[in-house]
Every structure is written in structure tokens, then in C-alpha cells.
Image (cartoon, rainbow, N blue to C red; front, top):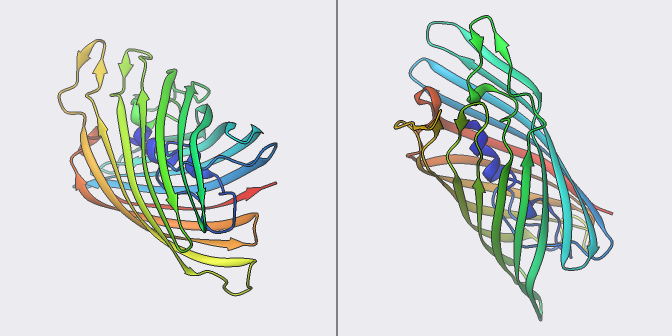
Length: 296
């Protein structure tokens, strides 16, 4: 369901939204990466995310615009928050339209780097992530047909936990990342979304290391394999049989560095396995992600 989209956009959040310590690589665009920021630094990441799901004559479009801000009190520890704006609109095959837009749920989290080993022209590191999603978004919207279902609300109304682990290996021209992120959902207003685990494998390559200005800009390309597994939803304590499952996406993308502190990026997620059962029987068609990163 749309809420699970944030597992990958954080990646649900998270570490993946930061710039690395050098202009060689940023973390994955979609998945979870291990990079923590330099000591006493700050970072920001802005994104636009477009998701389209459909089945038969039903179509759901979701626009999300999360902004993440991060502060580094020490080299191996970062704290951050993310706040999104969300727009969801469902068009049914009979022509009816339902949906809502507004501020989404706030996410607070921390990153702790467990291990780092620098090598000539490369780095190996591992990072642990933990956090909370807080119910700041509206979860009680209504329209002429009554209360909107949870999948169409800007917020979830629940306090949810996040925990993840990411590994990364960077060489002169290559970056390899492996990450996982779990989300434990609580019940709100009689509905409990299934708990989720997302995982990613990412390969990046410096296509043009010094283009067009040596030492100041470069173009990287990457390919991400991203998956999500969800347990079944529960309504008033009863399990929803038509829910849960596993899905996988392939996401080619690029990152262009505008000097050592700024980067722009984009990726397109294409489904290769659509076994995650979503509300209204919808299946993902495409997800487009674009945005920027900066460090100060």
C-alpha cells in the first residue's frame, strides 16, 4: 500500500539521503546506504516521488515531496528528521474520484556507523539505523462518500518503529551497497498495517569521473534491486487475507555532482515482481524519483 512506499523512499528515509565524505559517490537513490556525515556537519535532501498504480479501470497516483535535514554531532553519529507533503488520488473505473493531500508523518531517526576501514582509493563501512515515525499527518480525512480508507489518508495515525543495517564498499570507480530496513507498525483507529522489511542491492559506477570540470563535477550511473516483504494487515484485530506479500523493483538511475557539496539525481523504479497485495487490488506501474543533496 502507499505507506510502504516510504520504506524505500527513507529508504524509507534514511542514510541513503546523505552525501558521502568525498565527491566520488553518494549513497543509493532508492535503497539504504551506510554513509554518515563528517563531524559537526549538516546535510539536506529534497525529493519528488511520483508513483502510479493501476488494475483494470482503477488508477491511483501518489505525489510525495519529502525533505530531510541531518546534523552530525560526531563523525560516527548522525541525527535527522524527515517531513513530507503527500497527495493521493484514486480514480475508479466507474468514474468516481477519491483522495486527499496534505502534510504527512514526521520521521525522527539516528545513524551510527559501526565500522569503517579506509583503503587506498576506497572505503568499507557498516551503519546501524533506528528511528520512529510520528503521527503528524491527518488520518481522519473524509469526502462525500465518507471516511477515506487508510491507503488514501495523508497520515497513518500510528507511531511506528524503524531499524536497519547497511554495508558499503567504495573503490576508485565502483560502489557496492547492501542494506535492509524494517518497519514495525502499531494500530491506529482499528487498523494495523502489516510490518515490512525492505532490502536493496546497489551497484554504482563513475561513468565520467571529471566531467565536465576536473575535480569539481562528475556523472555516476547505478542500478538498484529493491524489494519489500510485508505481513498481513489487521482490521479490528482480524487479519485481512488479501494483504501482505513480496515485490521487487529494478531502478536504474544517475547522480551528477555539482562540486564537492551538491548533487542532483534521478531514478526510475520498474516492477519485476508484483506479489505485494495492495488496497483496491492495485499493482505498481512505475515510480519516478528525482531530487538533490547538499552538505554544509
